[in-house]
Image 1 (tube, rainbow, N blue to C red):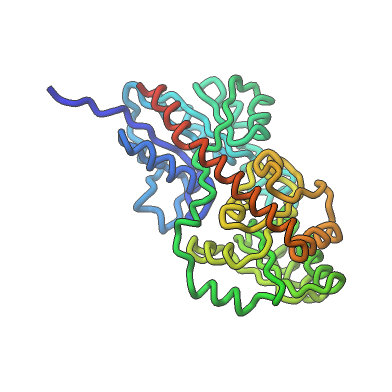
Image 2: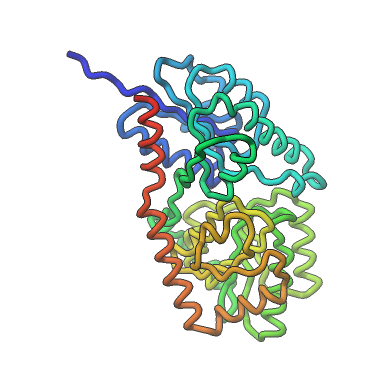
Length: 363
């Protein structure tokens, strides 16, 4: 008598890049699915460092009976859309939010076009999708507006404390400590793009230094997706002047683990967030969070972050940053709430819940 191998459950992403939130989520889901069946990740675009770990979309074999394909949607590509429509598997949609194209239209029209196609793709796939999951209620509303029904909210692959399991880079920790101001380091983790409003944070830190008299620096971690905007941020810091503004670019996980541990606050002035993962990562290592109340931020952080109005400007950010650095009671309370929030999310075991639902479809 031979044992039966469980039907494979594979995943498709548009792009696979180390450190990318969706790639990391897909990798965690694959690890869970591989506990009882074959599971691979296929991508249209692969970072060279992942070509041995993530397969090309064109290598997807013909579907067998009972197979399920998980598609992670965050923007679109006609080649992937057609590949999905041509396949026989039942499709499970994991929706991670499609940023409004208006944020990219002026500076990166090609990215704006991919985002617009992503929304069109959701409509094309709707009748093929047998299960739709969004990683926040804010994102679920997008799918409902496009005609999807029975959308479940599960933050697939979310594991905010993962950096606490990684040994922080001693060399990066040493660099940050040598660079940091005597009163601390304010951290922003975001792509350096206009809608992330890094310029607001530069103005805010300038006010913290000059008006509130605190010696803090601003450390910005994230890819320079638009070099002209990154250059404008550097020039703004020079003109103000704002001391200690360090644009570190993209960093490895060991470096990021060290940076979080060396930071005294994390800030976000973004105009749009579909889930807001970096604030949770900060909370996991005991860093208080300040953020604009936009998108899914309030839903994700609950009462664990100091939330500012969606139109908050540099003065309000400066006051919030100063308060966290001078009011030990507020700081301790935010750290406590942040720890509780991360524990609650991870206790809900989102990856395992999603994997169990998909396994039922493939049974």
